[in-house]
Image (cartoon, rainbow, N blue to C red; front, side, top):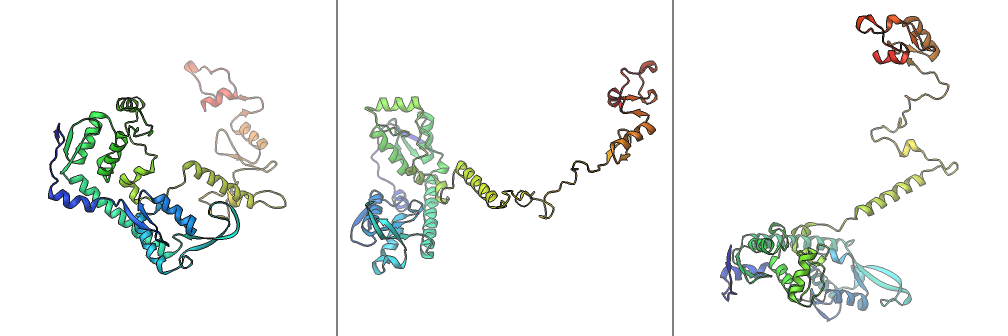
Length: 366
C-alpha cells in the first residue's frame, strides 16, 4: 500500500481507462416513456417515470423494486408497446377511482407483471445479467492495483488495492464500510460517502450539521462511523443482494401467519353439531400410520382390570387384593400393617436390625 501527502494529477493508465468504463454500473440513462415521447433520466427520475406511467397511462408495474436493471426492462417493453396496446400483454383491472384518488365507477387500469411468461423470462434474464456484471466488476476491484483516492477524512492518498483504502478507513478513522470481498462498485460507494460528508451529512442517521468538526464529533460519540444497513440505496454495493429473491416475511410475521393457519385448520374441522374437534385426525404424531394415532393402551379407565407387579418378584396380580395376598404368603409382607418379617430385612453390624422395621424402611434396602 502506497501513501502520499499531496493530491496527484497523474493521468490514468491505459489499463484503467480500458477496464473501468465498461465495468461501471449504468447511470444517467435516458429512458423514453412506454407510450409517449416523454424522456426521463435514470436513476434520478425513476419515481417520476413510474408516477407518469400510472397517472397518464394507468399502467402499474408489479414488484418494480425487485426488477434487476430497470432501465433495460423499460427499454424492452417500450419497443413492444410502440407496436402493441397494453391489453395484449397486461392484466386489465377495473377500479372505482381515478388516478388522483377521486371516485369514479369502473375505471380501467393495466398491470404488467410476471404472470405473463414473457415478462417472467425477461426478469430472470435481467437478474442473471446483473449478477454476471456485478461478479465481473467485483473480480476487477479485488485485483486492480491502479486505484488511487484521497482519504475521506485526512489528506492521505492511498494507492494500490481498494482493500487497502478500506483498511485505512477502518484502522485510522474507525469507519466501517464493509469487507472488500463482500462489496462491489466500491468507487461509486466511496464517491457517495464523500458527497455526504462534503454536505455535512452524517453517514448513518443522515442529519445535517453546521460544520465538519461538529459532524465528526457526532459520528464519533454516537458510533455513526458506518453506513445505515436499512437504507436500500446501499443494497447495490453489497454482493449478497445480487442473488437474493424477494424479501421473505419477518419471523414475527411468519409466526402470526402460522398461528392463523393452525387456528383456521382447527376451527374448520370441528363437528358442527357438537363443536368438538377430531384430535386423532388433526393432532396425530408424525410417525403414526393414521389408523392408530391415539394409542392409549397404557392407560386404564376407571373400573377396568389392570395387572400390578409385585414389589419383590416378577409376579403380576390381577388386582390389588390378590397382589397383597401374594406378598403376604410368599414374601411375608403384611401390607396393611406395613410390617415386614425380620428374616427378610437386611442386617447391620453384629446382626442388628435397622430401625424402624417397617415397609418404608425396608423398601429402601430392596
